[in-house]
Image (tube, rainbow, N blue to C red):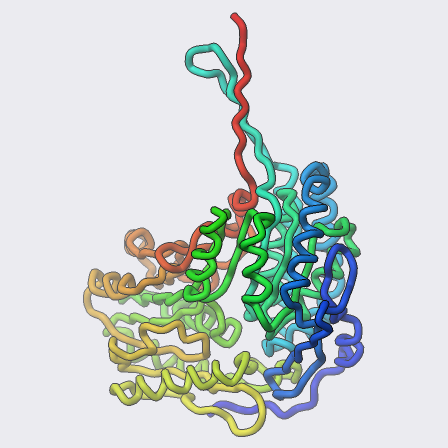
Length: 498
């Protein structure tokens, strides 16, 4: 039975002090200013449902101010040396690491994940700054002889230009760093729009980058509860040349349509419906560990979360039992408390969505091995849940769950398992558990996804390209090619007299 943690919160940092240390205005042109309309929006702690603080709630006028600042700063920032850009990012890396405890607590307060997980995200976010600090000085070009010998072909890489970066609430620090790192490294000025649920981490990032030496206007942060009022005028302005979005496929499609009007460069990291395949020869210890990581990271609120478990019928019962024991031993509660493993979901609609998905699966014949309920009291909590016998027609198997629920189906034929794994509009990531290298490579190559974890439930790292296929998105973030999303290639022809 899931335990509900009630121990007092750890006192490494005082909540009031941490909140007081974060700016709560808009960051425009290097200055902290209130919204033009003076509006404010509340930031809610999902573990208590209480208001943490209020931040500026931007409108259309603030969007125009941010655009003006970006337009003024782009030319000089593009001409700034790669070494200077690199050193700013490296200082941002150091400052982020130095402030790990404060940033982790801030993240736990506004997003809900346990402090241990939040510390991990701080390290993950910082590594994007370090990775792209190193990539900034490796932007290259090319020089080649034209086949007829009459000219030389020179290729140079130049920044795309002002970029609009829209990030989600589930990884509020890392998603900002994952987009800002390559944009800064490439020489692009940026406007960052965080999710309304988690604006504080983005404001803290802006403060860090300003302290690291980022020139005025190179970054603006616009917090708002009215995304359309802010995003639409930016995309229609003719100033923005690049849109990078992480979020739902539904919203991504709308943004792509808007971006098409001005033919903007786009990067889209959208929804996922990750299959997790456990083959007959899998090492079950490793498979259960990987399943736990792939399902429970961030309370299941991750686009990379394992969503559909396909387990060979000969090992399904043992795998399900062991995963249920692992998840049933978790402690649910306020992420600030000692011993808490699982924090709240982000809001009430998220809780209701997960509850409806569980009820639908049970109505269609699934059995609950552990969890399935919602603890009494305040907070948006859902018990870690394992179901077996999930009907393929259940909404749980065709919807991005975004919660701590594992629904297990069985298979006998590997070909059938792969077919079912690919039977989705999404294609972000897949997981394969097997001790047979031939099987591992066979399945990895046949899965219609952008990333594959073999005997591992975690694929995200700043050093590798992150992204999907089909309706999971366009482009890649991270890795050596991550900076390419913010660079254009220019060809210069140089005639040569013989």
